[in-house]
Amino acid sequence: PLPGSAKQVFSKRDNKFVVFVNWHTSTKQKVSTTLRVFTADNKMISDAKPQTVSISPGNSAATSWDLPLGSISPGIYRLDLLIGDQTSWRDFIRITE
Image (cartoon, rainbow, N blue to C red; front, top):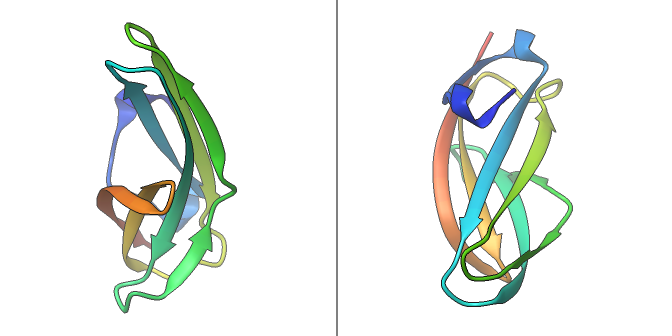
């Protein structure tokens, strides 16, 4: 998968979905990031391994997470990207049969 092929609906036949995050800042930063996946009932079902991102002004960085669909039931899920312990980005995806 490439970042240009963004979508929010995934089939269980896809086997996995990938979350890409591009970083750009005006100040030098080193942050710890974590991606969490929640059900519609607000139950966390995945807490990806934290990643450290180092960014400097004028440069970009990218991170990605591959998440398997094997045990995830069809439905709508919330994705939260945390910087430190604060949610900084949120989106929703749909998993279909």
